[in-house]
Length: 193
Image 1 (cartoon, rainbow, N blue to C red):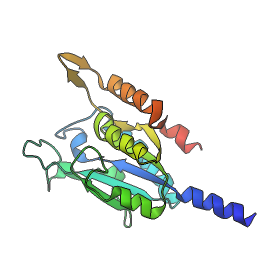
Image 2 (tube, helix red, strand yellow; image 1 turned 60 degrees about the horizontal axis):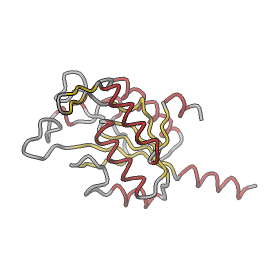
Image 3 (cartoon, helix red, strand yellow; image 1 turned 90 degrees about the horizontal axis):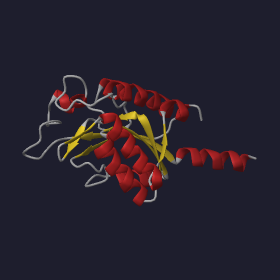
Image 4 (cartoon, rainbow, N blue to C red; image 1 turned 120 degrees about the vertical axis):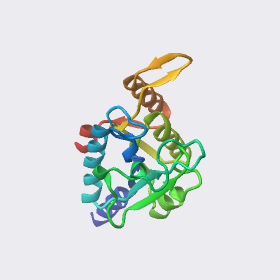
């Protein structure tokens, strides 16, 4: 019986929460406001609380815009700071990235491997860019992935004159990920487990 308990405990520890780019520029009056950013951050906060209470690994990812044409997440600005709803606590890993894929030129993969993590739960912004790029990379690295759809936010997009509403962008990208890359859940579903 003790062996089963230890095995369950080890399996539980193999899960980590990844909080991607929930930064001030994505909120009202920010340089790149997203649709539903505040609600997504509040859902992400609930997930953070769960992972903190269960003493499970948490990784915060912060994007810094370093390209010469960057218009948001500029270094040393209020907009680049992580939003107050999901501020990292002492001891929680913070990864700074410069590309949509949180694994590119960061120590994220090495950090997760060092913890024995095999399953990742994703929250953050933007669904169509950094969430999509990072989840696909994570799956390619062999991680089991879950995306909490209502703890992510995106924005209206345009392609060749066609306007795509944020709700449709969100649905399309989550639907694409669910085919092979990730299990898609909402906050309520995930917290009920």
